[in-house]
Length: 232
Image 1 (cartoon, rainbow, N blue to C red):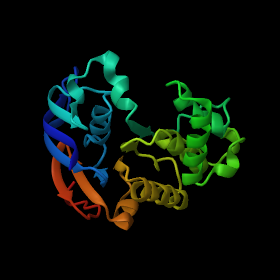
Image 2 (image 1 turned 180 degrees about the horizontal axis):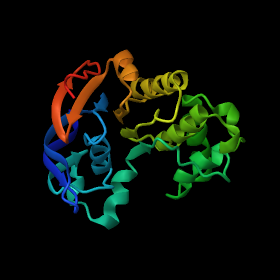
Image 3 (image 1 turned 90 degrees about the vertical axis):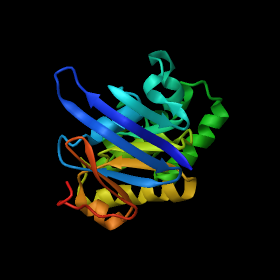
Image 4 (image 1 turned 60 degrees about the vertical axis):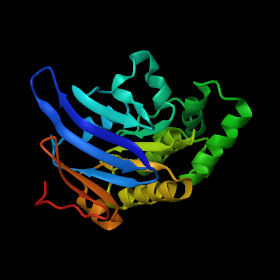
């Protein structure tokens, strides 16, 4: 069953740059998919369109049966509640503890206090940080901060997790630790994961589905792929 369908999508910015054109994709529920490509290939633009940070100039982006391209701005929160988003730069709140950073997402939607605690501790256990709940972000390594960001993204058990270069600021060892966390989330929670990356070592080691973009166009889609420089 397809969780995401991208149909005849084009994204053209006001300055005349076409970031995505003639893009068609189908991503099944429960998949783990890498989006690869060089700088300017359209990776981040595609991720942003999936969570409606950007709207396509034309075409359809259907997530969970809903065309997010047609969603009114005031309704965007409805789809974002059903997905988690992980960025390269963590985006943690520096004056909040690890626990408070993860709990914040649930408190914003009015979750009951006992449910908040249960979900937060489960998410932090899943990323291996249950022993760091009282720490502040500046007391953590980069890899640990990214784990907190992942816990925050999965705390409400979303069906879809979007990751935009989540290992971009990390060394190779920490990057692989983050990939192990994401792989476990995919397998144990059944969460569909879409990750934009330029790290060929990660892609080659993980051997997941690979979508290759070049100049905003799909040039390759493999079920168990590697980073093919010739294709991009």
